[in-house]
Amino acid sequence: MSAKQQRETTVDAVIVGAGFSGLYLLHRFRKLGLTTRVLERGGGVGGTWYWNRYPGARCDVESMQYSYSFDEELQQEWHWPEKFSAQPDILAYANHVADRFDLRKDIDFDVEVKAAHFNEATRRWRIETDKGEKITAQFFVMATGCISTAQTPNIEGLDNYQGNTYHTGSWPHEKVDFTGQRIAVIGTGSSGIQAIPVLAEEAAHVTVFQRTPNYSIPSQNEPMTSDYEASWKEKYPALREEMRYTGHGSMKDLNDKPAMSVDEEERQDTYEKRWEIGGAGFLASFNDLLFSQESNDTASEFVRNQIRRIVKDPETAELLAPKTYPIGTKRICIDSGYFQTYNRENVDLVDISEKPIERITREGLVANGREFEFDSIVFATGFDAMTGTLFNVDIRGRNDLALKEKWYAGPRTYLGLMSEAFPNLFMITGPGSPSVKSNMLVSIEQHVDFVTESIIHMREHGLELMEPDVAAEDDWVDHVQEAANKTLFPRANSWYMGANIPGKPRLFMPYIGGVGTYRRICEEVVADNYKGFRFEAEAAAAAAE
Image (tube, rainbow, N blue to C red; front, side):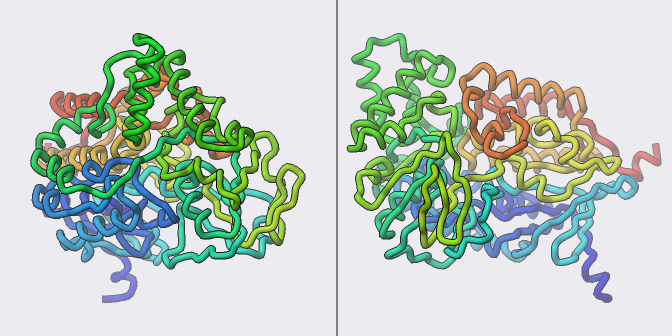
């Protein structure tokens, strides 16, 4: 076999990404008998949890709910050490799954997909990697995650900096020792809020540069108890089924009352109890916090007052208290002692909301007209969410149409799964699906099951290509925005809206209508003979008709 032949292969399906989406896809595709290649740019499985190794990295969904449900033995055998799992434990779980189902043999690591073009003559996708390999496949699946392209701001002078730089979304695999160092942390989103308390315990001094303060709720994390673990494992099938039809894909004690339907005393008591419980369930204190500005104001002010109570310096407390957007309209953060960290002698906060960082110097940076010197700079500046990783691959559909060109004004999908003019291209938890507004494991499993069952449908009916109708796609894009506009979400300049990326179109990218509502819509689509999708028969069958 020639070198050229070795570098050109044909399979039924190519999956990009070996995170939780890619692993489950591979497992299901194997059971279908599909020849499958998984291409992963990292050196191991785990996706988000492979890359995000920064100090303090932790999931904001409870461990007993942030796991696969497709295999009962897997559910029963795995033990989570904490209520909210840390990155090493989640990565260990991903590796356990890969080994348990012998998935690694079909995964190519340290391989980056550069291009994927649909060939209308052959009706196949041609995928090219950075290793020079070309792979032909009937089905092409982007299982690359929603927040997997780290975003480092383009600050003047960055290349001249002589110290060490790190990004929370692409952290070194070996331990970084900050002992005795003066470090800057730029950004106070979720990763910054998780990392800063840990970094402050190790470094000589931490200076935090904050553009926008964030609402954060204490996780109240604790070791997993055998009783709590058993309460889930004894009823896993029933609880999982219930989770699939909830608003966020997780079990939260939702108060069915509006905030303004009770008096001030009961309202404050409710918030106090939720704060003590901890976690994102705080937003379920009342049923209208994301719909009513008046109700939201009461929750927002409660959290601001908690910050003022915790942080001893009044000026710092006010800088840390968000006032420009409603609570919950940016992703709510879950922390372990974040606000308390600002009471430490070795932690300073610098507000850059009105005057951004001017430039990076050889020794540090200049902000607010003041020059700082640092041994290391940590960028906790987030991701080009939802679309960034899709655009990193040169994806072209019918008539050589680039996905990036079609989405120039914002993502256009049907159900967040497919885009018209790109046959047999599936996106797991893509824009226009609940994705980042859900328990990701629940949404991942639902999308993988939808894709797999669609392929089964195609096989049973002699169909070769599947893609959305333009009208169905247009209606869905409108519906996603209409759902968002009924809430307070558009009132925040969030990464949900693409606001953290210069020049990115501003529109709400996830589907906010609810995980359960979305699942029922998908079920209705399938029951109505895949309403909104069109199929083409296999070429041989079509020619015989």
